[in-house]
Image 1: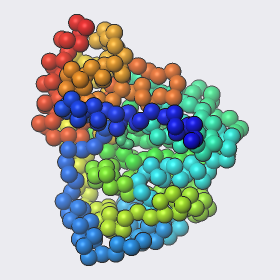
Image 2 (image 1 turned 90 degrees about the horizontal axis):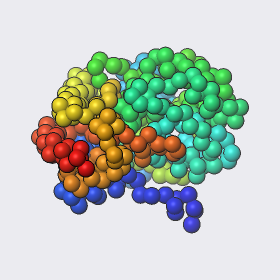
Image 3 (image 1 turned 45 degrees about the vertical axis):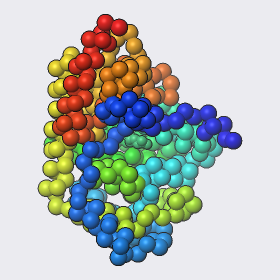
Image 4 (image 1 turned 135 degrees about the vertical axis):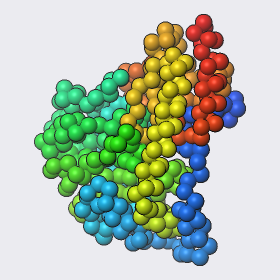
Length: 387
Ligand code: GLN
């Protein structure tokens, strides 16, 4: 067996969802919405299953979707993408990330990653032969600093695996941080692989800025998106990869032997969905922002220190100030078993020197779910504080 995978624990998302089922807990752990997703998009998929093409679609994706992706990013992010040579459809963003790493890394190449990091990144980098170099982000600001980049980049940096908006911190990196990162990438020989799956889930009037729009990165960056996050249907696993033609040629070689294609019915439905009127996207954000505020206020009223969330489905609390004698993992285990609420310990997103006082909650839920979580948490606090 490959020792890397044989020795990996089961992903924290699966573990916490299982514990939530076992304890009948409200599941604010794994990030998925209560809402079933837009009915018209689901109807298109059903229609395409019944009456459409169900054999292999083209390896790069159905033309309708590749064009819809190019149009969508033109309209929303000002990008100028050629659908034929610069857009590829994958089975979710995770496949896109794995494919990009396999296609770009030679064994021994250094890969810059930002910690806390989404749990799939590190094993994929290592399996591809990459040597991880971590840029630490620290709470409560989680900012990218020049000193941290200076320490992580070297002459051997081949890939930078970036994530913006950032899971699990809920940060949207600002113009100054993006410019700093772009400067380091331009000075290096690296390709910037950017996981932008949360691009539409940004709050308080923010607009997403893709790495492809940063000066000097149009030919050096790979942008990855996901219909699952845009439409709140996380099981769909329809991802988009955008990159200049030369990079795309290598990326497509990895994709052709990872999954080769993605269900054509879902691709047709996503092509339709990406063309939905801007009001739908604005309403989706506004709804999630209300949910963020509902959960955030509820947690703050209970005395928790709530960290800001500018995007994603997530907000974090810092349990340190409560005088916790428990670390985040023990807190989450007790919360799910005794308090009946599942959350994610943010230390699970660290490769080394974890921060152990931050706990992530998913707020992409109906009001009743959030209210029930808050009321359970209010009963949990006294037991927890006196423990
Ligand atoms: N992206 C989801 C989250 O952060 C988890 C996806 C998964 O369970 N693999 O909660």
